[in-house]
Image (cartoon, rainbow over all chains, first blue to last red; front, side, top):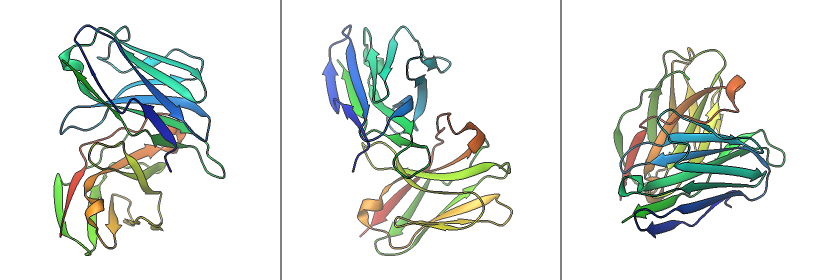
Length: 118
Length: 112
């Protein structure tokens, strides 16, 4: 079954509004969470890395004031797209890294959130 | 991370084996070879990984060349549900806390 969930699965918002996407690790504690963005017919692009209790590290070209990441607990990270514009429309995927029972630390992916900004 | 090269697309008939190649000529001794796949409109899914020896699991097999400069993901009997983009990714385990970096992958089309 799924080990990482995202909510919502899809969202449509008006230009200028903010949207929050939640990412939860379901049966393990995620010491590190990653946020990716994927445009149509392209590969996943890493946006930022966050460790629980610390500020996120953003990839070059990703605006930290526009994409707010909070990783306040070991099972929850949120991505807030502030003042969204149509060019922010994309598929946002979170990933959580941690140890599940009996295994090595792995990176598990959420199902993604389709954001459409009108 | 060392670079990987994969064909943009491949096609297979249903219920036939599929061999997905990946070249990684600059692989280092501590790089693990990971394969993930992404079904349409979903997040990536782990398939298999290995270091030197061939690996088998319930989803697939991974054949690694003796010089480790290439590897092949083998789906023994393709089904329509295997249609996805398959990504071959190298990562040094010393940096396992870092994010997986995805290339363009191979888009697998499975026809009935």
